[in-house]
Image (cartoon, rainbow, N blue to C red; front, side, top):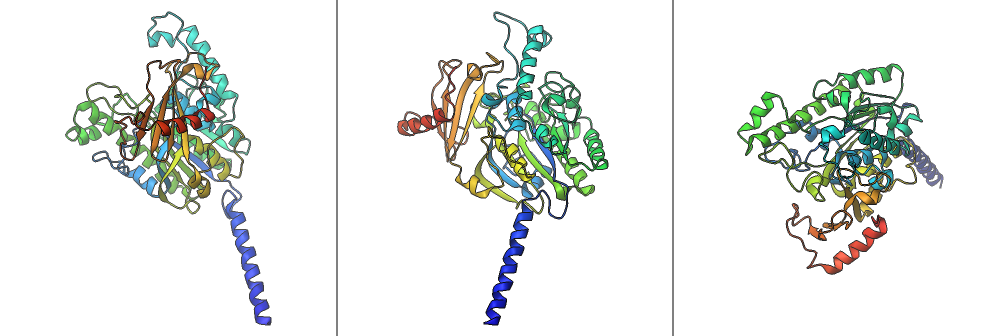
Length: 444
């Protein structure tokens, strides 16, 4: 009997110990009082197919391949909108564009104007419209703003559309307020040193840090180092494609430099690294622009991206085919540092296996390049879309796509969305449309 009592006591102590370990696992970092640092990598105009680990036959991305192998990697990740500005705003807020109201890249053009974009960017109408968009981002919580309340220092680099970096809640940054980045666009293309200087400053202050690394890569202008262009010149079908492929590898090299810096300075273990692309890109083979069914479109070529979360010792590396979305990153990171997502965030905690496993569908929305009405998101809507399992439904918005057709694709059998099955599957279309309307009806 005594032996049984002793055994019961041992089991009880073991359970208490295990409970302590589980409780500790909810803390930012076991054994330290310092919350985890965060590095967010956002590639720019980068197709979901264009990585070695995603199966591209020619493009080499060894550093992103390594990051993927060390991460919880969702190969079926998505952004809600296939345009830079609203996509980036969704990443930083964890909200859909119709929630944060930054739906488009630019404000409305003045009625009846024939103004060229370059002239419009210098006009009072543009500056006034941009100010409205900047105020929209100030009106909602952002990752750097929420993290700052917990003592984090944050650093903006690369693409940033919403005015001065401070307007997004960053404590430090490079962009002063031009259309999509000014000084911030030098990161990666010219040097990584500003990030390293910021991290070193945060360490001196003994503060946790958040880095926003969103370089203008592989975004045009496609001006890769000659050594990389030479590597792809004979493999690509045209020079334009070779330039884009080389830009992808150039971006990969900068990610490798950043990862090596974290490892070399003993920061990798207590730093969460997340990765996402802002939208896709299919290179036009003859011209320096994107091909159809990629950027600005309702198709996976513009919407799909791998999403990665690396946290050594805390997140088990795994390649997952579960659905994920960029709006999941904010709630995931907030949960990781012990904070609750805001009530308006509809994304999941990607580290919650049960929640991710129970997810049935994704929703998204694509808008006009120039907004119609900056205060009414539905006025600029072009398409809403939803994915359930392997089925994707696209519903055009009559206000901007009056001649658009309902589209339905089976993504596993038809990953490039070539065969519209809407007429063959009216029941499925009806059911998916009902759920899409319940999410957001998109009416002006």
